[in-house]
Image (cartoon, rainbow, N blue to C red; front, side, top):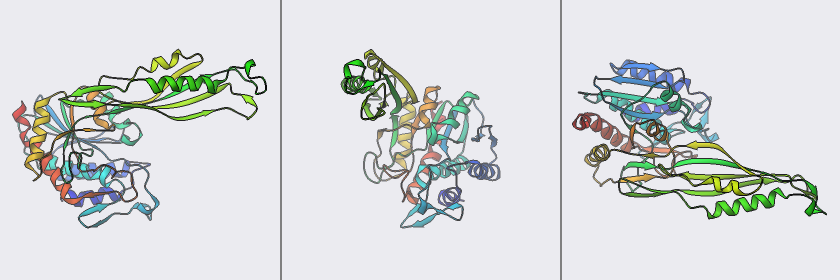
Length: 360
């Protein structure tokens, strides 16, 4: 079975509410098609291992997806179509296509002198719950190629290698005031006014910046929601403001300055870590593999949003991201993946597996 056929099988299986059936198929395929040791952990992750050695390389993906568009469901399953050289369906791009390519490469790569690992996690779309659970249980590959999207980043028609990506910190600014009748505003403390002062602080905060393997990387911070007040004639005693911050490796915007405004408290709701590859030789090995498997010249690039590579990197795994998904392709009603690019990713992953020993 090749990457395209396996992709269609995996895409057809619903996995936005319950990843069990998709995990069952991945586990069964690995047990049937490979001689690997296969584990299904308590979180639902599927992890397989081949080869022996003190160093490990992992091919990493996830088999959960975001909820499908109504057009992508039929009779309790997902609709899968193939035409014009592309496979259409929920999860084709993000990221069952790359999972399938990695599974086939894991099966076919000649491994010597190290351990090759395949891992498909649950819960990536809801904050990396599967990856975090596996790491807490001791999952600790030395190196990883995470199959999230890196195609059409530097130029059209090329699959690049991501050496860093941004994280996401989401926070709520809780603002307390004192209620009063709106005809006597001086009798109260207007929480919306205090929130406005806090917003002015956020507006002036610097964006986080860093450099990864010679690439300048810049994050962002923005107010995205505000909620306050109870009635048109009441000075509001409460208000909340949502902040979206895109973080970069080892840098955060100093949100503590917002709490210098009276009555203001900042609560971090989500903190998805960024990723930075910490080994130029490994980044070059994957880039060399990508270069050998396509006519156009790929590059080391940056990715704007978080993936499970952030959790792995935070735990000490040296990571890059390389996969078939293209910008603005995932999570859409017409989500699709190129069959040719799936084949290319299979070749890249297999080449990485067979060349990895040269790093040791």
